[in-house]
Image 1: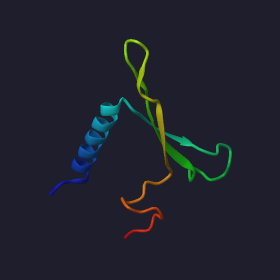
Image 2: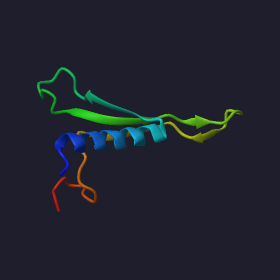
Image 3: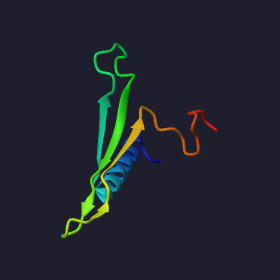
Image 4: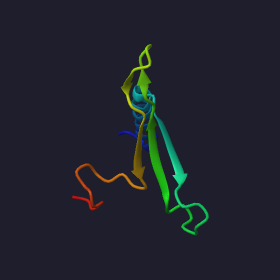
Length: 82
């Protein structure tokens, strides 16, 4: 049986590998600072830097992905479980 520590370690390693593959950074921030939500509005963002060749021609644009405050199950836009 996998322990929760085993699952966490495997998840972190796979997430880090994905971030490394794209040279990406993952950030969580308080979206509406100064309001009394006490963290209910924390949003996650992934930033993937652009790539340019030696002549300065872009091969990939800078990309920022707003993951919002919740990642829903695959195939869901409503957040409701299937």
